[in-house]
Length: 442
Image 1 (cartoon, rainbow, N blue to C red):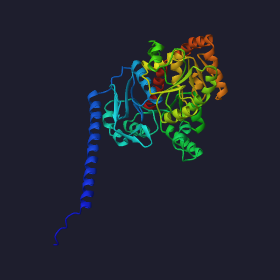
Image 2: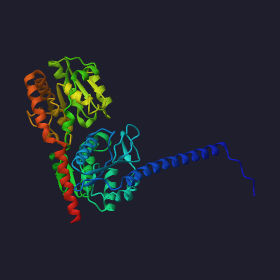
Image 3: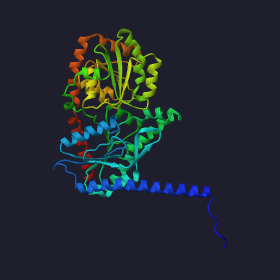
């Protein structure tokens, strides 16, 4: 038998890399299994969820949740809190996040990975979500509520079949209007077709669909969705807006003089929010009110390009970009400090920030598109503008220049917003849940 030849340096290097790669893979798998074990242990230690005698035991599942801030996260947090106040039990399955994650009891995190091209979002591991099924079965859930159409949708459907319980889904986002902003290399018509077909298929997998607005329900019906669709908008925690914050605190924090006329936008800094329109119409406001400032509050993928657009238009000193503000303090202070709230999104499913502004007595100037049509009523805390620079700027100038109008809009806004109390909306959702549970049992 010929003597064995020693390995070359290149071969040794390759084997070393392979061993290191295998070790890293094993380490990651061990970490994932440990996280999975902690989730399962949490479920087993909790025993059956503590709903009131007449309350429902609800399992929600989502691809996005806090610390990721967006409308879906806000809606889930709002409904969960309100349902618990009404005597129901809510458990939430959501992805892990690398930073900023702090959880209350009842939130189960499934290991996740990053989403290519989207640093803000995460993708749950499907198999690890399904691995919870045995532990979840011991919790005797009445129903599953799916909030997003990605891994959470497919996992929610599979878990519903395994547990023998109905599945409800909220259609939070009109994806045909969003996709072209992120998949620019494919024709918009093709993306729209795919988004509609996928939406119809997913809606037909569930017992009932929740739409945040009438406009969203109408869109789904045009697609061909035949599953029952209930319009239940996200409610507003009105009690959270009863603790005023001095507007001078907000102005002082960002070096804004008392004489500055502040126009506030709150939301993601994303192209579909149409913030470019607000920047482009600003010169017509500055022509009459040179002390005006546009405050854009919220982070997102378009923030850098929006800031560049403002600078190139010579508006660098007139537009201030801020990160997300805490809803329980600094954000309320921003609303109260603003002379007006401005909003021009074309794809909003509801526009919860509009209700927040109205509840705090901040006059609103906004276009009425998609779900915002359900929220806005001319004169009831707001002026509705056309999506033209001339009309929108004219409405802004009218509000800034007329203190009597501002005071009247500020008075009417909180009255109008009171219709959207989150307990009222949660009660509607609970009635839908009971209908689905009864139909399944029957």
